Image (cartoon, rainbow, N blue to C red; front, top):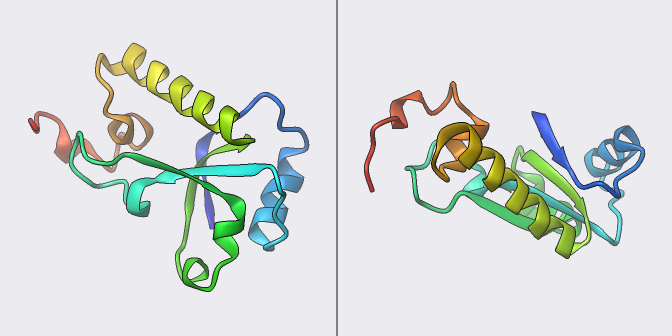
Length: 118
């Protein structure tokens, strides 16, 4: 499990280091949601599924333990998760003029996507 260098965190999250430790050691939190790239792939085409939000409990499932998750956001509660995604989208639009979140969050990995039309 990895965390994005510019991790988005909802305002009610306190003790981020402890929360990261709990996520890595499968000791989640009932109210915690994580935001990851869709299909855990920062390289999909512009306009395709971009982000997924899931309860941290999903990371503890047998199928999920095999995946090296890249977490781009942590929220306390589902509503704050949606607000965090809205904030990411707004930041993306202000920085790039579009809603290509993966190109915004992973600029080096997605340079080949520039100019791709969907």
